[in-house]
Image (cartoon, rainbow, N blue to C red; front, top):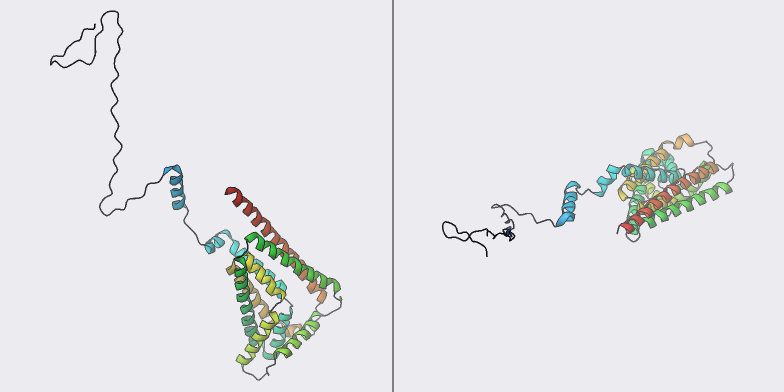
Length: 302
């Protein structure tokens, strides 16, 4: 039996004193329960922020604050793709349209009505084609993935390069492009109707606009523009195409008198066009490869 020491006030002691030979077993004090921290109520008028669940929620909240959403147009400017797409559209349209039948139609009208009327009418007619190509390209892009559109553009440019190569191989080396294409443009102008030199500038510009619009319909340039608009951002392609058409319309109007009596090889034009479209096709194939690789990365990430 153990001797129990009583306190001065008669309260039971906290430690029992053992008799000689017995072991001392001190009872560990019970741990006091820890109260959960009370939720702090927001001050009057303040909005309580919703709780973030776990580390994943904290990371998502940090990313949403650190990376504000940007518009696709701002992203194009930030990455330099806007200038790249504009330059490519300008190059494609320039090569396809330079010394084309439409260019010679503008040239012939410049000789008939003057450079200002020819420039105004041809620019408006070609701008309408840019709008049509942009609409068709944007519509096509709604139904196909980006990699498929890049592949279709590359195949289109390959076909155009093959056509120019065929014309290069079958054209007589002595054939004059200025003479043959100017004659073809004059025949088209007769078919579209002819305004007299004394007609008002509105009537003359309207005729030029109509003739250019009809001559460009179904042309290789239009096919190339639709392919570009379907696979690349619409706005830079529009601006690049418009810039190319304005420059070409101005050149047709200004150099009409300078080219009279000159010789320009038809075979040389076809050769330069074929080589250029082979380069454009190679660039489109690179875009296709990048889009296909990005597609695979997205599939693995998902």
